[in-house]
Image 1 (cartoon, rainbow, N blue to C red):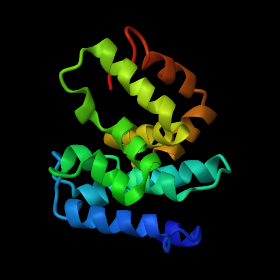
Image 2 (image 1 turned 60 degrees about the vertical axis):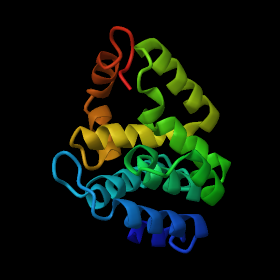
Image 3 (image 1 turned 30 degrees about the vertical axis):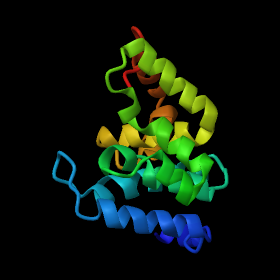
Image 4 (image 1 turned 180 degrees about the vertical axis):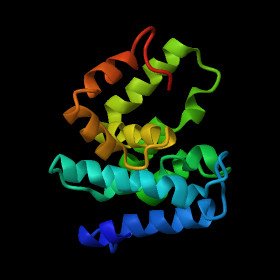
Length: 173
């Protein structure tokens, strides 16, 4: 939360509502690896998004922070859906969270899943891309994914690992 205070985002109404919501619904949840969802996943993903913005000298917006905090809520919390997200946080946050929620891709074949995912990303723009990258890299065990990517790029490792990840039919979302 210190990173939010440094950017005067801690008092933003949307950010405050999202923090309250994730504490309420994710506060006692554990991931498969027995880590707490909040401290072990949602906060690190959000921090990584902020680090990305710092690294690229871009402003960290409330929508980006809220999207990062809420990116798993639709699939992890029964009863929380896109209508609720829209009513509380607005259409932009709803679109970000929907684009990042794998629940919309269940039962959809691989090619259609990729197309639906890319359509969602197209609607939301860069926010969903940054959050998804932070989410995937955090899930792979890199607590600070953008710092890891920066190190890999400076060591000349990024291009090879990036292209290797997209061999075949494309990424598995």
